[in-house]
Length: 370
Image 1 (tube, helix red, strand yellow):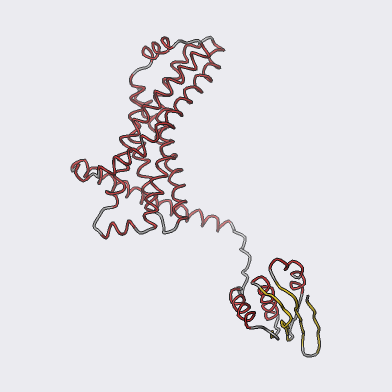
Image 2 (tube, one colour; image 1 turned 45 degrees about the vertical axis):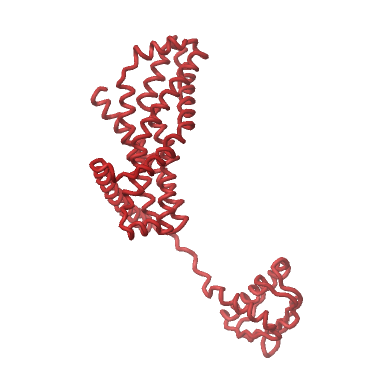
């Protein structure tokens, strides 16, 4: 209960009962509307039974607003426990609630674009530097194979390769099924159902097989690389490595990149086989193209270069995914939130660069007439 009285000496406010958070809704509006401008505000708290931080905040906020309007605030009957709580809460209330953010002008927008552009340039140079460092360590490892940490390499090959086989095979199978089904729907209109074999084989072997495999690996293994190394940086394990004279790139990056260079072509091959199997199965079910006819047309009309082009892309995709993932991990700035942000950026950038690189390869092979 709140009772107020005004006389020549100022405003007298008597608060009684329990001021607890669960019951503040009954008195909050009263406290918010109470004013004591330019007077002495005396708050009688002798009749308060129980007080928690919510109630103390109401009283402290009232006192803050009164002082801001030129009033003098004093308390009567304040119990020691309530005094300590009120003092603690009052210290945490900001004196200035802060002004509203000003509306951004066009010049502010231009400035922010400029800042992001400069930051993007710095990130590009940092990535290029890290890419060169990785190539140097990779070349040194090729010249001196004993420097390669074989246990770490085998472990990464298992994580990035063997454990990814089920999802890659399933993806390839479903892609083959979808291509056969959609291709049959269109080719039936022209009585050219038999050409579905070429549609499946060329699109899968040249493009979709290795491209979708790289995208899955970027989302699965690339994110794991960034999260693992980023967590090590947060816990200062990478700094400890440097203190011990160990090269983090050689210890952490090279085994992961080499594992991707070895396993991504294998995963791409598995995806190709699964896609051809799925496409052949759907062609048999939907078009009546027997497995023997499918294999015969595959041999006669699909050159080895279609398969070779897909395999040529695989190491480049692997290098891009590995370098981007590890570089983003090295950019982590000491917090779990930073690890999450860098992991997301790693996946997005890896997938974007893989698709962009695939487009460049398509133009390159088209110019060569392959």
